[in-house]
Structures are given as C-alpha cells and as structure tokens.
Length: 68
Image 1 (cartoon, rainbow, N blue to C red):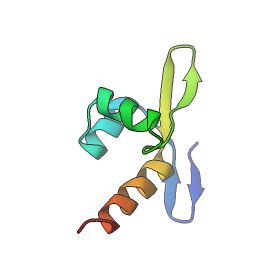
Image 2: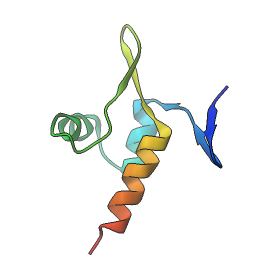
Image 3: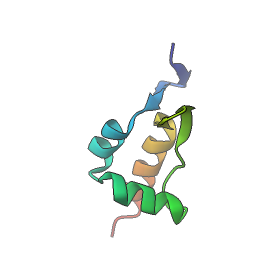
Image 4: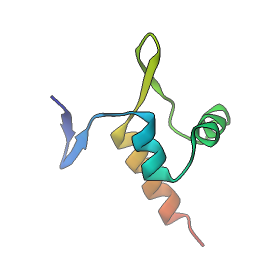
C-alpha cells in the first residue's frame, strides 16, 4: 500500500518509469546521481533499485521552476 504525503502518492518508481518522467536514459540518470544532481536510488532487492516518487516529483518541480 503506497504511503501518502498530503495528496501526493508516495511509491517506488522503477527505472523505466523514471526514464519516462524525466526523458533521461539510464546512463544519464546514474551520471547525475554520481554528481549529486539527481535523487539517489533505493535498493529494493539484490539486483533491484527504485526511486522515491515524491523525491522525483520534487526534483522535476525544482527543475521546472529554475528554467530561464
């Protein structure tokens, strides 16, 4: 059951969903993470990671607000 933060649903996004939301491919996402410019992945299994949906939405909102 997803947690809720206000009206925002909090859940774990897998990489294809993050790629679709950001428009970035795997290599660019991991590069931005290594530079500290993208939310860190959460280990959800031995060979599986995901991202907090709220953190991704906040990151996207911040990028939109910083556009020139």
